[in-house]
Length: 175
Image 1 (cartoon, one colour):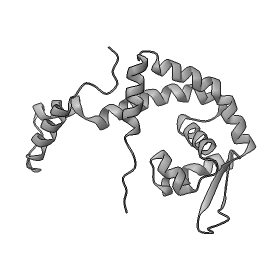
Image 2: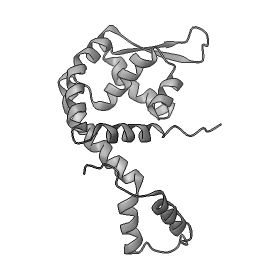
Image 3: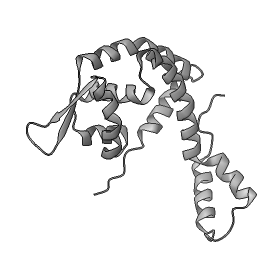
């Protein structure tokens, strides 16, 4: 069976959280608890899977001079059609400051354009340029090959469940 995240049940998660909640912070972590965390830590499993998947997509886009993160930005821009920095940051699950910093190399390459919003001078909008559109068009085949390679071991219903489960993660409302 092909799994990315593991098979912890809701009961296991409740036990783990309850078990760890009762631990005094001053205690050192015993081997049993470390093993429990290593087996069940969602963060660790998702990060590992993300790195493995990301490398596969990086290989697919290398000839275009972009990485998987830059592809994600460009495809989000195409999908959102000239979003504000805040809208794009929310879609990508990151803060605006980090996003702004990471947009600069793409803007320097002429793949996107950052401009002031016509209705709100405080907001900035990001749009794909013609060069950005060309990069996306060139990335399509590589994306398809990488996507097929990454998902090959999953039955369709398991892949749909994984995708739906990941979609449940949304940015935390800080308001």
